[in-house]
Image (cartoon, one colour):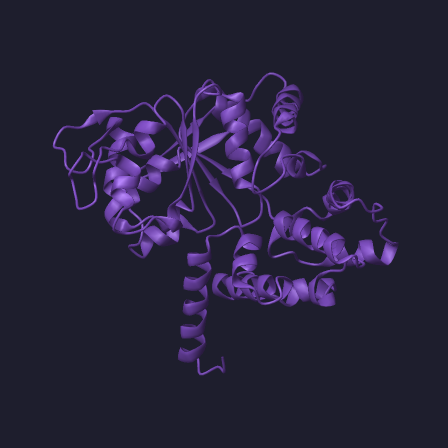
Length: 353
């Protein structure tokens, strides 16, 4: 596994020697993942099944990172299972018996975010009738999972950097720092290098978080695994809704394999569950299955890819913003913000809304 640390004047590359038996390590990591019982919002087995070498490589690196207990950055598109892997790191690591506290950074309210994360003293502000530990002190000795860390307000980032550098927090209303011992696992679907370049994310914080990066492959790059996912989710939802297991035809299977799945595993799960709820034949969203659609889609244009993902999620969710946000694995507030941004971009481009 290779970790790259960069600065303006130098770049150093550290190489962690691979385990003696990669196959054995992957087996241990994947077995640990399979043994987990409840992992919202994704099912753990949805990442266990599969033949994809990229997923096996993630398992190798995840096991090593769990053993070391270092800071980890999980990257990849929405719906690829980043929280599942964060919980795997907790399960197989030295802190497995301690707390695992997930935090959705996109949902932090600007006025209370500092208190929510770092705690506050009694009387620190109006309504603070009692003291609060905050996330990091509540998670002492355990793991704090910062989901959508790329959405963390810029003014809070120096305080998070202090947690990483010094292992301490200063509660609101106090001038005395308090030591904390937490492992931080962060996740984002943003390109943090670009966020740094555009001034929305601190460069020093990015390097601290990116000690070990685990990149989740998108489902469109795992087409050989799609039949396995279909089988798994079909059996799961057939049992849940007391219906026969769906046996896809060759044409249906081909359509599912050729669809680009902008919402990844979560979207595939949603589509199959929806078919059981509505008692109808599963089909790809919009019946748009041809691989030529994938080639025509300008994936190098991140703005266009984001627009396609949001529009597809809304269609799949029948126009319901909350369900579309859940499908994409983002907070409803983030969905509202994305829609506003897309609308503004359309207006600036002179396109009809």
